[in-house]
Image (cartoon, rainbow, N blue to C red; front, side, top):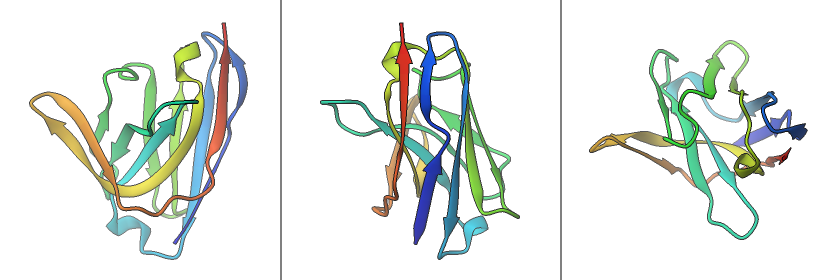
Length: 125
């Protein structure tokens, strides 16, 4: 399993970035895919995920309305469009296979344990 995230960079608050994660080594369109992030000194957290067919998406409250997840099953790639970036979005972003949804209205996500190289997003104030 290989997961290669890219597209991070330095952006001012209010700006946008589009992350990509190219995958290989598994049947991409059989899996839920998610984006996770880890800020300095904090635990990794789930941000968003998308079902295998791409028609259902889920978001953490902290990014809802600002981030959009999508996937291209023909390219084995998952994307994260990030708009309205805030300094608190600064983190290393990773994609992963896993499971996710809402429990009592709260977003949850669990990765299956395979982590590729992440991409650093830095948002300046």
